[in-house]
Amino acid sequence: MMTIDNYKFAGKKAIVRVDFNVPLDENGQITDDTRIRGALPTLKKILADGGALIIMSHMGKPKGKVNMKMSLGQIKEAVAKALGTPVMFAPDCANAKEAADALKPGEVLLLENLRFYPEEEGKPVGIDKEDPAYEDAKKAMKASQKEFAKTLASYADCYVNDAFGTAHRKHASTAVIADYFDADNKMLGYLMEKEVEAVDNILSNIRRPFTAIMGGSKVSTKIGIIENLMDKVDNLILCGGMTYTFAKAQGGKIGNSICEDDKLDLALDIIRQAKEKGVNLVLGTDCVAGDKFANDANQKVVPSNDVPDGWEGMDAGPETRKAFAKAIEGAKTILWNGPAGVFEFDNFTAGSRAIAEAIAKATDEGAYSLIGGGDSVACINKFGMADRVSYISTGGGALLEAIEGKVLPGVAAIKN
Ligand code: AMP
Image (cartoon, rainbow, N blue to C red; front, top):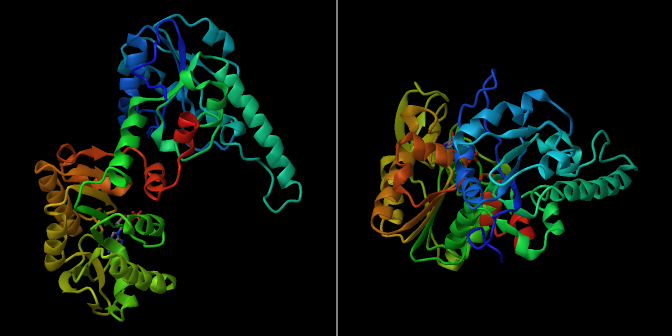
């Protein structure tokens, strides 16, 4: 497979798919530029090697229509500042051939939001799935998606995918475009390389013991990952809101705690699978309950399977926090996705903080730790411990699908 380090960019035009889907305030000002900074190593490397850059991205969900609130023109100057060089803008991404042809080494062209064209996502618009004409519309859209991807490909000599956030989508710019470049002229960017390596460390190059911590609100959204990890981990901590589905499934009383009543059998099945596979499953035994879902709720520590009426489990209790720390201590591979409590409320962060601290300590002692999925990243940042873990993934859905063991179309398109 061609790599960004081996490719000779001098005199070449590179079309690079990045994830510049940055949050903007009502004045179009960027409120968090993490994603722009994330793509800089790749973009700067190409420029430094004497290549010209064509940058493409989506922003928001314009659903195949032009919507200037989601125009990438708004971030042109920020990109120029980050790159330290002027950036030209192509206001129509499907009609930028002339501008691309005119690019000289070291120059940069930013294309308008790819999702202004429905072809980017490749889903037919304005027709219901139930409509008998839907299948034909879908076929027609797939054909025009190929044309759209071919047009984008025609702008450049090589294709670089550095948008991990959309790697789980088979879109024109993330996967289909790769068909128009031979294997020597397409590659992953640095950010993608790092993300793919991080997933490999968790799924293939495992150093033992391996502790995975899955939290968040629901077991249903994490079940694919839990099942895939069950064959790999030594310790599995399941925490957060899903604690109470497990407690109820085992006959516990959970008061007003959140619970997925249709997943009680699933919870019992997970407990059974863990036993069968020799996985040390760690579930909360005590919790910090609140008498309302608010930061200023009254608190009391109660057994996770005996939450009084009118109270709800909102964070891990002291005994549980110790058990979590013990399962993390000494681990050599650690994955954390999802908080152990309602961490957005400052008074209910102790469980998530205990996990973050144990991970930081284990990492100091040589463990490889990967944190991913929006909320756990927000947690580690809130606790100021981001620099004490091995890797923080930039991908939400993409990371979760990769850990489920699914092949990401954005990666497969380059590798195959
Ligand atoms: P998810 O999107 O499934 O990863 O869930 C993240 C959310 O789970 C966060 O917003 C947390 O506030 C929430 N959460 C964690 N623990 C609990 C709990 N015990 N009760 C209600 N929500 C929770």
